[in-house]
Length: 191
Length: 191
Image (cartoon, rainbow over all chains, first blue to last red; front, side, top):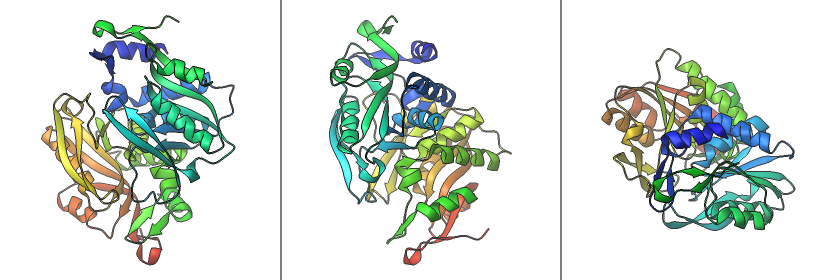
């Protein structure tokens, strides 16, 4: 997605440790118009799929999950990284390690919001080691539903997540694919 | 907002301890169409204000903050309840007690995303004791900007937050105002 790649080049920062910082339009400040266009692009890429529900994870997945779900006319559900005292009902939970927070979170979704026999599209902001997306996919399958695909805003193609998910049989659509962040330079995969 | 009140009556649960559970359309499963309409309603209610930026707090504020910001054509910024290792720059931080998580969170926004001399609209899902909204307002003012108003999805009018914010001089627009949750019944303020 050319528009997203341009923004990454204009505003993104590549930091030591293969970290890409895009907090000016995706991770803390959000550009609503860009989020809408990203949602439209996900819908376009998965136009051949029947989709009943979009699943994402708090917090940075919510904006692009919402615009995707809005365009599809289906509900959005987001997994929580911490449970609230209001989550008293039965949950799907799985452990996910966050590289940017340096901690393992148990992510949870109330079972009632992941019904069986649905086609679920997973949306997330980053794909690096693939833990989040795999955790979400596991919950969908535990519910007896099908993961129709995984839509990613920014894929770090040089990290293991992409191949891990592809080998597990998932269809991945990434709006921007990064080949390298070496020497703090941002280089995209040629497409 | 009649549509929101209907949904609260249809799907909301009033639990002991003055808790209203609306996780089927606002807090974990999100109805994108309703979120869009809520955003449009906020924009309508604050149509007399110049607004440069929408500020909310993760996670449940993001969807309605996004639709509001989208309609206004301005950026959305969300305060984080936990910092990431990527938040290395200067931040505004304030402590907020969460009644549903029974803990005090330090909420933070990177200073670069709250510039001075702006008009900021604060959006949040619930108004109960007013701590979150006051914390967000404090950060806006510390930045040298103005809080033009506070848009709330569901106001628990029987709790202290509303009067606390009004006495502090803030304009509050709540889409649904709840008079009582006593005996696990949901009663709205007559308007």
